[in-house]
Image: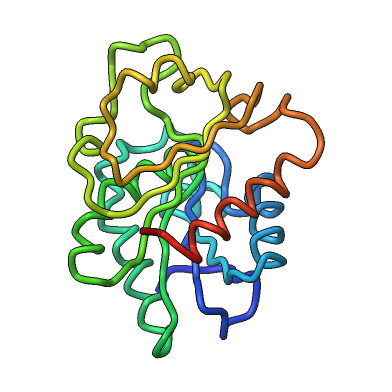
Length: 208
C-alpha cells in the first residue's frame, strides 16, 4: 500500500491524486499549500510519494530521481488505491507538480479510456530539461485524448509561453498561463495560488 495524505472531504464529488516533483516530497511547502487551497475549493486531494522519495525520508540515498517512465507502475498503483475507495458519483483526476505531472500524463490516456479517471492536472509541466529546449517531452501530449489542464508560469525554464505555443499540443489540453510565474509560480504576485486552485476546481467541475 502506498502512503497517502488526504486533504478535504472524502465525500467530495471530485478527487485529485497529486504527485510531487523530482526533488521535493509530498510535504513540500508548495504541495501542502495547493492541497489546502484545493480542499477549501471543494476537492479532496490525495498526496503520495514515489518509492525513491520515501526512501530518502527514511534516511536512504539521495541519488537522482529515476527516469519518469520507470515510475508509471507506481503511479498506476496509487490510482488503483484511491479509485477503489471512491463511491458512486465521485470522479478521480490525476496529476502532479513538475515530474509528478509528467508521470501522470504518461498513464492518463490508458486510465481515461477505461473511465478510471476524468482528467489530468499538471502544474509546472517540464516540457524540456532546463537549458535543453530541443529535448522535448511532448510526443505523448500531441495525440492525448484525456481532458487535461496544464498550469504554467510564463517564465518557467522548463517551458515558456513562447516555446509551448509551437508544440502542437492536443486540443484536449488547456494551458492556463500565470503571468511572470516561474517553475514554482513565484514572481506572479499575491493571490496567484488561490487563483490556481480556483482554475483547477473549475476544470474539475467541467473537464470536457
